[in-house]
View 1: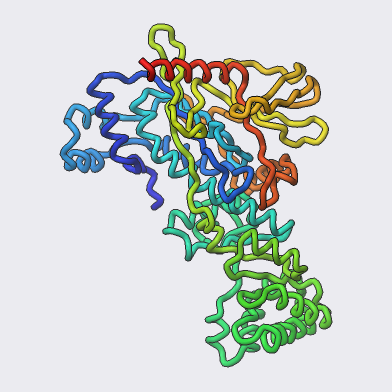
View 2 (view 1 turned 30 degrees about the vertical axis):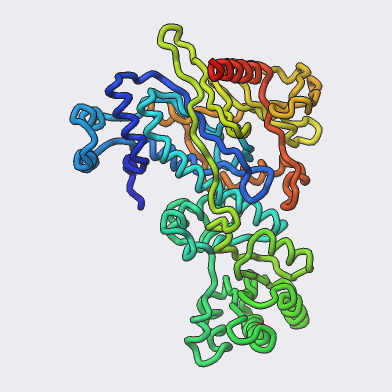
Length: 487
């Protein structure tokens, strides 16, 4: 699970294609783009995550003797190719959008520039790593937005699809906005806060609820959140919690981080009634935490009902992204280098579905911000060779519905290039911020979105447009391909 060498974390056809290129022989330099087509969860954006693990994968990419022996045992790889693999290392360049960045469909999240055998091999692992963490970070961002500033704790380890999903899902959830995780190993690995209270079994193991609460409070007076729904929230749990809090106050124990947790029942009603009881006893500042199959929709509903909940423990529906369990990232060939001219020849994939027609060439992505609001106006995919000047007026247009055009006046907008180089000549050239630093960055990123784009129902889309030069190149390639199909 924590092995550094994940070289065989790939689909078999990557290796069979590599052998085909090796035997051909051709190993021209190519460009592959990793991107996605549809925002998860019906939203208008996603959050980039997983870059650090992708870089670690590239750094440790090598075929061990055991790997070579296993591939030999399959019976389809020839000895000269296996000899090549035994000395394999990645020599290419990789560009990526930093973790925590707000991202949109069709724009390259990762650009791999490498000999085709190398670029082909890394496809599966890049998709596996980036797809999963970006999905969970996006879901976490939605959940935290629904909580409107309340702390959200990631509690999903026991429901995650295996240890890796639990560990790296917790990492992504914190990047997306969670204040911490119940996952102790994730806390150790990524230096993020670990949080938790106690289970119903703690209460049930004592002769009565009061004794269980009192014992817990003596052990953890500085972090005393009591689970009040084992027997009856309002008749037993909250009264016993209040009794313990009163005794702590009488004993001079500071009540700095204390409260109750409700894990079942009508959370809106129970939290409001519990708050009345706590406030009447002088504990109106107590934390009222809720769990129980929460997601952004239920939290938003509870907020609308004025539930007196100010801390949320979110598990299954976050760590599995229950309503959208897969992030649809793909990895497509965009260009092949001409060895004679040393320039890249654009490549395009066609489809009857216009959304699946790829954007060709060596590209980069610019984000256009309004200078007055700081909000995102649009993203612009353009050729890497293009130079943009924010003092010049530009016309941006929808690449599918081209009649949708916007004039952006020079001097009114700012530009930011999103893709940065993280691997150069096979070596890391990028130092990842800490997970908590990424969390802070991600919060600022989300502040660049308009409120209309953050709502859960029918959100306003953020436009991702093509530069005129890239659009013209794509149109020309489509016409060429159409003419060939007619011959």
